Length: 382
Image (cartoon, rainbow, N blue to C red):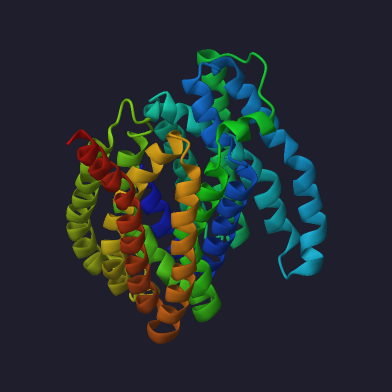
């Protein structure tokens, strides 16, 4: 999947250039953050619902949640163009296509991960990125250099993946009633704030770079992020495997897995960055050559992020969302200041270095949670 996603990024960069690539990145990241805001904690609530045996109600809850967003989408489409410079058509693609489909996929993903049905989730993601990659390839072949068309393809991939997940879950789990959104949110405890803050932490650097360096700057920075995502996919794979509570995953094992994930991702990033140094210009185009050093500077943060993700998932599954919220909130405040200072002083390279420093702090704080728990258990046993 990472290879297909990387190909889609390269093709879209060649199609749109630094400015268009930056505008597409801002639109898709904004849509992603919108999904997290509108999730209301339901994905983790459905994960816990699965663990509690409410399997038949998962699909109905996810469908109802996506449908409930449509009036809000209509309001956003009518109001936002009068308040900002956003064009109605790209906004319609995001609010009527991308966000409802992505909210549904996000909801059922929580239950799929709890059910250890990672293969199903990965297959949907593969279809998603394949639709975008193939579509952008066609646009490039016929020389239709439209950012709006590229955004529509991004939304179409998400929608197709959501339909496939729907069909799979109808057959596997059935469609027997639903939980209310309030009930599903309540099951997630305080995970909603934590998930929103953590997603902002993952994406906000691109908004800061866009504000400081403009669309072209964030387009080049986005290519560096795409290179680093090769390591992020591996880190996320570790995180998906540990959606467990303390009875099945003791704190000592959690620390060990987190450190193993960081080491594995760090080792992977060495050849990735080396290859990227030589291949960025030939693959993405000469306009993206400056992404090489930024990708290298992002690499330590990618490894650190892997450790944090491994700890975050079981904490969420245990209902310790408040802990995640406090840590990620503090790190986000630090991050905004660091990214802005880095971008002002060193452009995209300064922002990339600041990003790695922020993720190293985040990893240290999250690792401290299970590590201190192990220390307490050891002292009590003595």
